[in-house]
Image 1: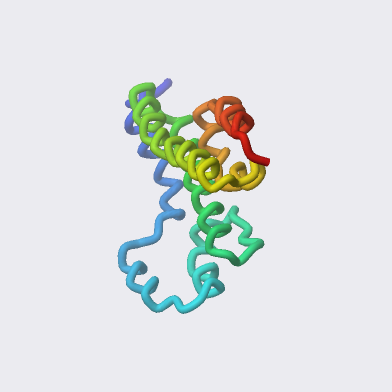
Image 2: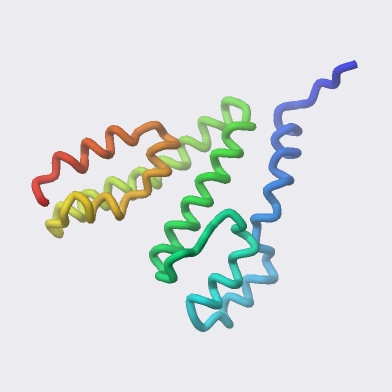
Length: 144
């Protein structure tokens, strides 16, 4: 006997496994008590078990958290019905816009192509299947 499950019920069940990655509201007050980057890493590490904080710069932590965020979005995407997938793609476009802004800023500041690439989150571009477009956009810059 097979059971038919509504698509949204299915996604709800799938997402319940991701709750471990959500920091509970009452813990946000503890953020105010954090005094250095090492404390921050110790605080957030349980919520991001697959993230290895190799470098202790705030930029590296931010990049790792964004990458983890996009991986969670990808998990949701794979389990979602079509209309929710369209919504998620639309939501992620704002991060692609941030990547394009980074390219423009790099051009204005006359950064090298490698420096510009370091400021781009390619996980977003892979997710949207726009990596080739962004790489070509970086390549047509006139500097380094």
